[in-house]
Length: 275
Image 1 (spheres, rainbow, N blue to C red):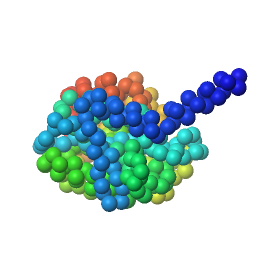
Image 2: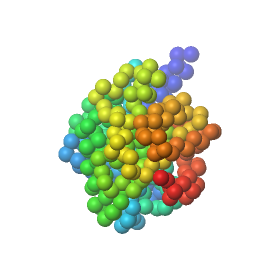
Image 3: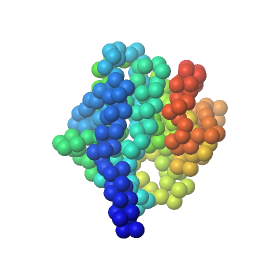
Image 4: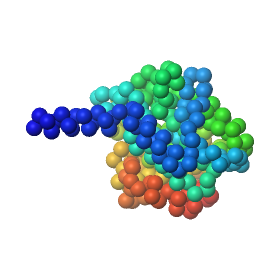
């Protein structure tokens, strides 16, 4: 029994290893022909993956990752928020329009000197702090300039949806805001799940007035027990009646399954008619 316990502990440590998580995500991108870049925003270094064949995009789609491995368990913060399952990266790689790039959250994937300012608060209660949103906004501007884009489509997964929404509220070049299993009302989410408030963070739902003119589409899994449809509805309820952004609930999906498999079809069928 002791040997089995030791093997299990070693396996768990290996699974949680930041090095392994970085290697797996990088391999996923490289196998698809993408390359890694690092964006210096002054306050943080943000990792990104981009396709070398993409030289110019009139409308650039930027996928923003979720919270990643923010916590080891309900009471223990992680030492590194690099995701175990980079779902936003997988969505970006499967985008059939081929004008997509991927942007990680602050402190994901980076190592050494690039871990500047990477305190645990930036993936716990301050994960959506003003300085985090400012850094993400600056990184998006750098990607826009790199590809000489005129318009930006933001796609945020889970906590990345909160970042995408808060960034969109500060820009005038957002062609569309798309969220997948998005944490769109953090105050409602923490209260509903009996979690500690994100005291150092901005709440995307509070930015609704600046988002009224932006085309939006929000996707939620009907089986999602992490961030359910009630969170999206709490966000859209902020908007005036008759002008609420559309929510698409896919009954058999949860927080992880089965977005990647269905994503090319969702993009082709729905992105062009958001309102």
